[in-house]
Image (tube, rainbow, N blue to C red; front, side, top):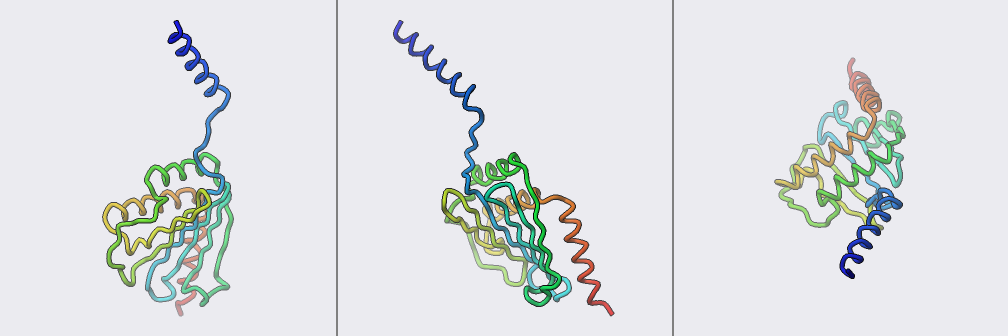
Length: 176
């Protein structure tokens, strides 16, 4: 009888907790990231970089820099965007589920001249720096490429279109 009452109490408590508590997000309140990507070493008209910053919270920003930083600051374009709580939680879940909040990475010899990246996550009061994509190897490289795609995916398409238009205009400004 005592065992039956214990089981009933456990079930009742579980139902009450789930029913009243709602969905608890495992995402920390300070979750955020900074993702920098550049084309690598190219002639100035074809070289560009962008930085995507997200959080903490549901705000983001894309900072587009055509050419080499400092050379054409007048062409720099910064635009804010917002993402939904669900998008932010899904992004965090992807990062957490794939163990991207860590210090050790499978790296090799850095590739010179190709595109480079900087990816920094903030969570639980700590910063987690991911090595440049040009240094990563094997599964770690594939995983970080997937994370970069997920981050790019929360930036609205109209911002990417505007950035691409600006890059074309920048390239055309070099033609005689």
